[in-house]
Amino acid sequence: MTSLVVTGIGALTPLGIGTGADLVAAARAARRPAADPDGALRVRAFEPETIGEAKDWRRMSRSSILAVSASLLALRDAGAGSPGDETAVVVGTRYGCLSLFEEFHRVFREQGPRAVSPTVFSTGVLNAPGGHLSVERGIRGPCHTIVGGEAVGLEALAVAANLLLAGAARRAVAVGVEEAPTLLLEGLRAARGRRSPGEGAVALVLEAEPSRVNAGVRGAYARLAAVALGRPGRGRAAGPAHAILAGTALARAGVSTWEVALAAVAGTPGALGAAEAHGLAGGLPSRPTRLPLAPLLGDSAGCLSAATAAVAAASVREAPVGTRKAAAVASAPSTHGASGVAVFVRAQG
Image (cartoon, rainbow, N blue to C red; front, side, top):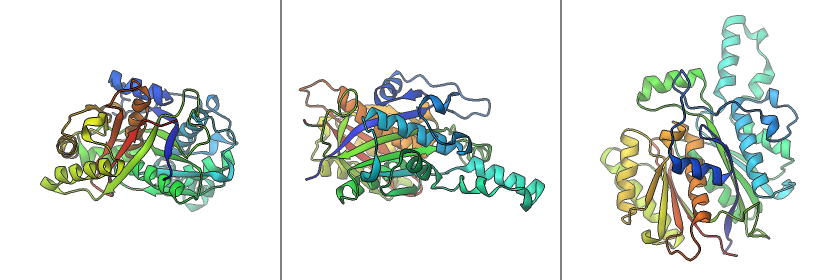
């Protein structure tokens, strides 16, 4: 059976910029970053040129800059030089490049159709981040963009895994990304009240039977043992539905609940977070350490759910050698689209 291994992680989040070790350390520290005056949690000022070269950073949307930057960090972490034909790109996002569409619509409304730039439109479509990454790194494998709910980052990871298992590629970059423009903030405030909007991007490099398990600087993070996606339950059924999802993922992975040392969870406020907590209490009766990430990253669907996978994978590599509790779970429930649970175990080799 093909083994899928996480060999690289890159993250640009309100917690900082770095690889898997940096992200899991910041998550464990649990120090909530300062919000901007509008209440959003954003990536602190950074220059993308310091992360890697690109033909034209200036023409990219905020989402593209974040997604490409996180992916460059992840590919470097994995020790991947020239990705080429055997690499796939899968981007997961809920809101896409809204800031560019907001600007496009503003100019159209205020100055008329002759004033708008077709370049702004083309760089603001939902699949622009994946296209930019493929062009910048010379990636010629499959390129997909998944648009979904709060767990869309785990959906992207599942699609990347399926591409590798089908033999369509030997390496895949799965990235979850969101931005927090004014238009989105106004909508979230009106609809959700308690949630803090957030932005960021988290990328994972997944490889099928890598020729060197000791990829990257410190070795492979973990083996992706299973990803389970399912329709979210409604009302009182939401918790039991997530418990079934967690049980399904563990069964597919061949992992008992007592082997799970950590659960990296979305932990969103309100009913969704309560359903997740209830579901994991039933699906993981061993009560592993929980790391809720929404208080640290904000309501950033693609980024947040991808971050649960990255934190879970990075925690597995840090587990002491020989310990039985060396598995980790990533959890992201959703009100729209699929909910997801992923299981990571120690990479062998």
